[in-house]
Length: 135
Image 1 (cartoon, rainbow, N blue to C red):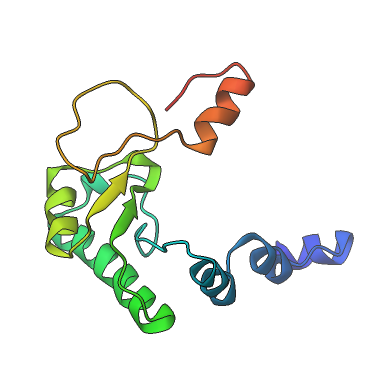
Image 2: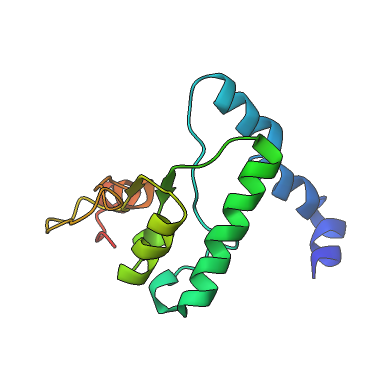
């Protein structure tokens, strides 16, 4: 399919992937400008809370290991993929030394941990601008 698309349109999936995703050097630049690089998971499961504890831990450990080995910093923040997490997730992140984390919405409610700071996800802002519902 990719071959057909590229032949008929000149579209390059390799170029699109390179242009869409941040590269290591982009992350290094952010660090030199004073930003933090935090965890988000290794393969971005959209339903982290549904994964068994071992799989959740493997996601975050792999992500943490990559950041530490490639960027030479220890991540202490997390942005929950799709805002999806559980008490198990929070325990894993605490075990890994994560000190703060961000949800993906400003939904009212009790947040019992610094790993659950409300923030508005860009996807929610776009949906609202288009007249849709938040996730």
